[in-house]
Length: 430
Image 1 (cartoon, helix red, strand yellow):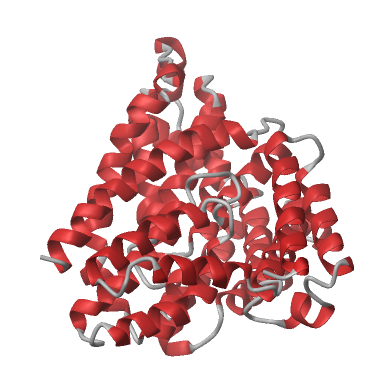
Image 2 (tube, rainbow, N blue to C red):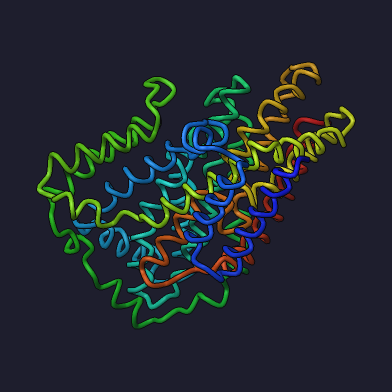
């Protein structure tokens, strides 16, 4: 590697260490790292701000912005209080039942929406229901972030890396359903079992609080019915447009911004109220992180790592699949999986062709998708949903540290990737 490439690696590791140890605020670490990358010419303004492969992913930034505005308006209607009471009553106040219910809702919704949108919608419900039952909110938020990443793996639109893989590999929505959805059903069940063990100390059942919740009437929580129906109508149109992306060809970011604009323009909500719930530090953190990771792309660091992994397999399909799965999971734990998949997909396309290009060789695409999506659970910065959840928690006065998230995430990633290994081997390689 060149001197600039080594310098880029050093800067990235330094910024990552600051984020992990929380010696400085994560936004300061990300912006500082991005600034040093530009100063060292590891990247440049054109690449940082305009490149699809190595720049800030504005689709992610504006998708988050639009959905945060929509969620902020929805919050004023009281619908999240309604859902919190409904979920708590369905679980009869039992903490583990409640967690399992929220995990199932999150994973299912993430298969039809992108995982970031899902956690933006479910997080306010979680804060309210945990407050009602005097439960620690952090385990619930961590579980939901991980469930969104697992559930989003099942479909083409569930996780941004899947869209990149589908485009490069010529795969359809139904291909993802047929090849990944069966495994994801198993992984969600395994994950719920893991939650019972990982968060066992947080499941404190209080019969008196549970009885109080059971006595509540969730319909009384709705504060503005007119605004609620207006908001739900806009949200339904936005979600429909997400699902119909293969037909409409509108990027999710465009749909989210249009929905936010219509909602603010058509209701009595003021602009100040609409943007008051926007997680600006989270958006800025993403921008800095994208620039740092893009610098590793620009200097060829990620490609060299990927090429080395590919060369180590000597063209054997089975070995290549396993290496791709586990290396993708490992790298996606520390590098955002969107630029990683964007960099790796041309290499995988070549490997698919080198192995005959038939349906059996498509296992490499599924290995890349599973590794990148499931590996994102390993750390607090491994996936967009994780970063958003950590930001929401900090904003609400219950910060989740890097290591608090990661000590659970590493276990979940190892188990889910381990379960995926025999699935790929038995279904495609025997």
